[in-house]
Image (cartoon, rainbow, N blue to C red; front, side, top):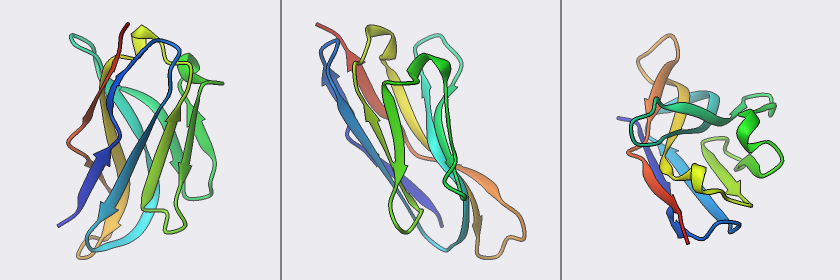
Length: 121
């Protein structure tokens, strides 16, 4: 069984910062990519940032220059440093992993339970 557990959400004022963390655990054989998505009320889930096995990163245009994704040495831990947060950043943030796990021959998508980020004065 694979689990992705997020932490670090909360309430922050506009212009403030938060750091999200996500750790994947279980019988993980390979990490193809890990990243963050978010879903605001009434909206579709959207990609925020992703980091693939080579270390290359992808960012949504709306967060470029303000958010930074990074990972731990084991590649199964991922962080999202969010600076200069805007009210539009209020959403549930989900950790995502594209992983190969024991007993499977190909990768699958795994999700965390989500952590609430509220940007408000």
